[in-house]
Amino acid sequence: MNERLQAMANVDRTIHEPSRLVIVAILYCVESADFLYLLRETQMTKGNLSSHLAKLQESGYVEIEKTYRGKVPLTICRLSKSGRTAFRQYRGNLKRAMDSMPK
Amino acid sequence: MNENIGEMPDVEKVMNRTVRHSLEDGIGEMLFGVTFILVGLVIFGEATLKPPFPHFWTIAFVLVVWAAILLSRWLVPALKKRLVFPRTGYVVSRKPSGRLLWLVLSVAAILGGLGGFVAAFISHVNPAARAWIPVILGIEVGGWLLFMGFRFEMKRYLLLAGFSLLAGIAGSLTGTGADRGSAVYMAAMGLALAVSGALALRANLRQAPGPEEQ
Image 1 (tube, rainbow over the protein chains, first blue to last red):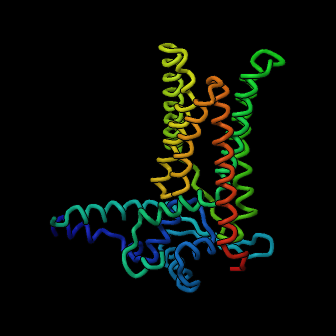
Image 2 (cartoon, rainbow over the protein chains, first blue to last red):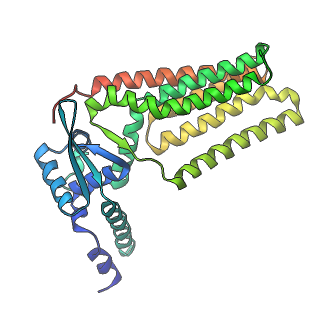
Image 3 (cartoon, rainbow over the protein chains, first blue to last red):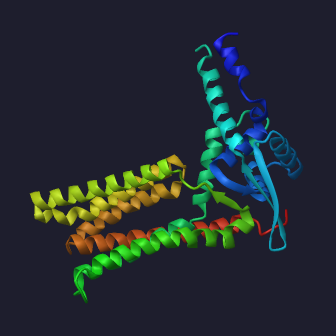
């Protein structure tokens, strides 16, 4: 396998999906964010956001904590340590793949 | 951001937007403004009033800066939690890593030192040129605002950068000396920051819908 194909093959498919990439990029910049914040920032539907968060949680990239602020339910999401590492690696691999493209 | 869903999103843009979000509400800016005004008052007091005891104004300056740092750690998050987050969603900013914190402190120290050195040099070469110290302040603060404005695409920071330079020049042209001129600059810049922050907060609260249950 040549270098370009190798770099492409190394790209994490869980993160590479556009909607999940937006979620992970947002969570990478903050310590934690609640569901409402992610909803506003990504402009996804509630169902769509929930399913992508579930997928990321399944992969161990996102930790989800359900709690209350007063009487209002609060879903707090944060990127796990492996999620942060995976995002950094994803960006590195994608850059390498792009750099090895013919000009 | 919705237009990006379905095609590859611009990750840098998304990350910049997230950081910008924490600056958009103007709360931090208001606190900076109040700090500038208080520092301006201390400088003005030092230039015009007799201190009740030696080093009074130096102590006052250090106290104002420390109070601002401590308040910013407590008051800014508290105001955001009360006013902004119920509308836009709760978010906890990342604490800067030790390396980043040292980098920021080093850059601030270098800029402060450089400003002090330039001011001392000017005073030594031509004491009358001390009157231009407010311009140096204006350039330093304006430069920082310009960097932040371009880095996070904050148009009002670019306007504030321009105002900083103008306020510096105005402070120098008052002809009342370096200290009073600097006090004028700090007060004017503080007022501009506080007003800009208050307007941004009002716009932010109007734009965001009221609290809703998830």
